[in-house]
Length: 393
Image (cartoon, rainbow, N blue to C red; front, side, top):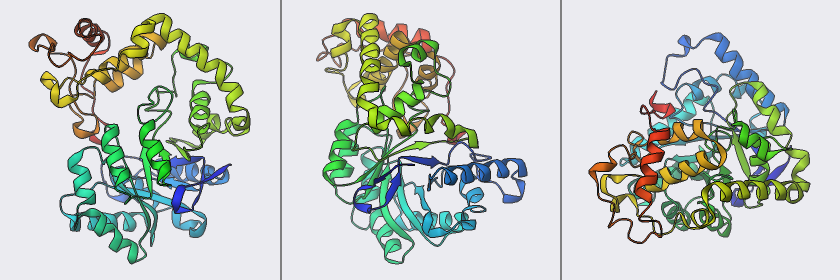
């Protein structure tokens, strides 16, 4: 395993972390005695496999159902000083409720302290305000830190880049859990802001949210050769020194295997990535057109300025991935979250497009005349039954 300094926390962070949202029994809290032994054994085997590889950062959240309780049966069997344990708790309007939930996480995990406490889902102005206002959740977290129950405080986010930058520039957090990978690079500005403040940078779900790379489409497989899409994406992320660790949401012990192929390649990253990046860009330009490829994001309205709160940017982005790389399954899974995922994935699909006039909201886009038709085609191709976030299932 390779390790990177996790910003001002000074922790030596493995470049891969063991994320805790795919191996638990249930997304809902359940009595411990209802958890099947087979599932618990798989979770424990997954943790042991991670640690045998040098992946000593175990990451979970209060919102991950039985994950904390199940980890609480295995983590205390290891030397505590050798582990880096992170859990995440959503910021609340009532900071006392936030503190109680952190205490519950500690009890579930059967640990005396968290190395890393993340404010889970700082996704909009409201959750940011809950987090950093005087007398809010940050003050509560600092009290827990003074009591020795928390060592470092960060936040996770699915929010727009400006909200993330605002949270970073508060200079109250030690690290950030953020979405950023080859197919979605919008948050680079936030990563640069985090680097300026010497914050740890943890990439959320690069294999799942980064393109369902557990089951990539044949076209993407071909374009990424000689690497698998998963190895390519890991190498792309880790080739940037501002990135410290990637979360591997392992469902079983063997899920680490493909990722481990990246470690001996890091010294050759530039040489290996260059031809793949060139092929991917050429393919995208050939299918999307050069003008669209370079300018599609220009002048797009924010949700509040869009009739029906249609998430135009997300819909167009996913349409690009389908057209260029055949990423239909991934696009469907993301697009059909719109309308039901609240601030975790805000905005609506383009299913009621005919009811709205987008003329004024698109006036600053060089593609204002063609975007409505493009949205309609995208919806026809990937629109379907609403999809729930995993934690809602």
